[in-house]
Length: 434
Image 1 (cartoon, helix red, strand yellow):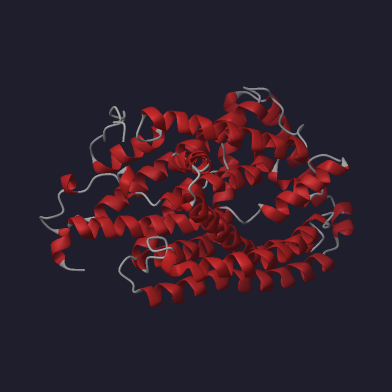
Image 2 (cartoon, one colour):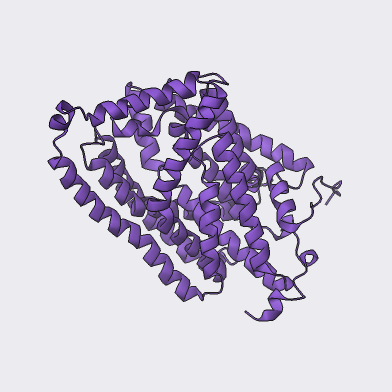
């Protein structure tokens, strides 16, 4: 990149937020559907301690709860954060291209964008919910900037390495962990006063007590402690995969897959005809393996399931993405206006993905935490599945209604204002008949 890009021509006034006419519609549609998948998975952490799976505490004991848990593991777990990760990298490629087109300083502006996202994530994690992903995305986003000038072939190689690395390490770790667990004298340790099962069971009970009946201050402290644990765990286990998906999205943007979808139709057909059915079969096996692990502390099944999910999850993500893209293209090309209007709802939700993501956390914590309804630890998997669908279904028309009057979601507007140094116009101008 020439020095001219980073010099006098990089006026902040030369680049503005993406206008509606410049948006790639299918990307917003993908984000809109991804919001449902993310909520389906997050609901299990909103409503109960995440260590429940380690000590064999199910979310409900009825057959319908078990069926719902299997459906979530099969169709949602590990499938939608890869989609958001891929779209994150794709979004960077689009902004990189726009910065080059306008002769603007991409590095400085994108770094500011990531800092704002990091602050959003920090506030979300400490004040609302400890399962935040925004803080982690912002940190890994700085690593993604190192790849901004790489050629597409180089990006593809790096994406492959980064996606394969955690799987290989995961398999090795699972084998070692299984051997260690089988040799661990848990009964003897319990007799000596170190009962790991009791320790985790007490931690589970304490977590339920704090979130369902604790004061806001107690919840704040417990949430902060859990967030640090999650941050360390995700940072250690998931950074290579997330960065790999970021890089893959950057590659897709640089070669123009979503800018020229007709020219890359074979890629989407491959995903719909091969990745989708194969991914469904593989992930059914992964779900069975995970849910038959009665005790995650002494069984290697859960570890192996989580490891193979690193490959099986993104494979099904590719299938989902392909089907959504092909279906959206067919609907948009159809003569029926009513059919095309069906896409308005997920499109609007996707355009407000940040606001909707954080609103999901606010609504769910008000349902489950003590300063709301206090239902933490009392909602089974089936009820959680239904609740997720209802919340998402409500967000769709609200998003569409909001965007009838405003150009951005509320948090999207703040994000852009802080990124570009001045607030863009929020309210819509009266539309002409056209």
